[in-house]
Length: 235
Image (cartoon, rainbow, N blue to C red; front, side):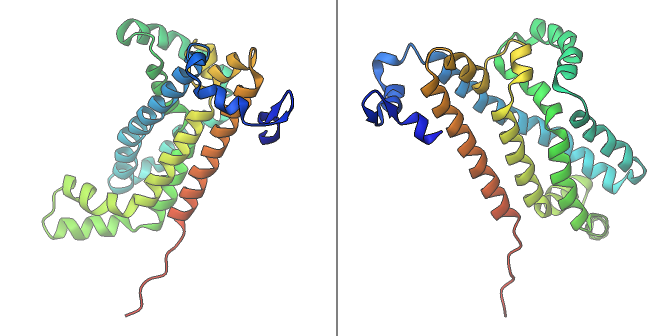
């Protein structure tokens, strides 16, 4: 991909890279930059929805309703077993209502992406939650007089930092690489914009695809570094 993006009529150069930022090409690549912006907004909105809905539910089930653990796991892992085209068929009537209430802006895809990232986010948080004796920590905090909001915010969540970070980074990577749902629901994001521009300028399409791929590797690297066990300090 790097070699292809550097090809020019006379050999190799940075002409295609420079063309992206050239003022005279601003109109040509307007939709592409709009797709990048939409994907970044979607990534932030999806992570916010995922954390707001999934984390409190998992903590509640772990502390108060452990008999619902299997049911919650089944619900969260279900989206990974359903093909994207089937998800779109089910989401289409939902989005007809969403379009009437919130409009048809690209950010509304975050509602669908919040479902799409559930399996990955659940596994990342569940692995961290299993390594933390949340029940004992909660009981100790309650014994010392802490209320449930204090237990969750000041005792449980600080011990889930790695899981939350991993879930957030995986969600961002999934959102930046998603094409099927956005295309079939007629929303513009990075991947749909790359496909459109590839019809007229394959070099720029490859450049943006390569940048998205590189960002995915960076996110995975950051997640791996954050999840690595750090040796404790010797006294």
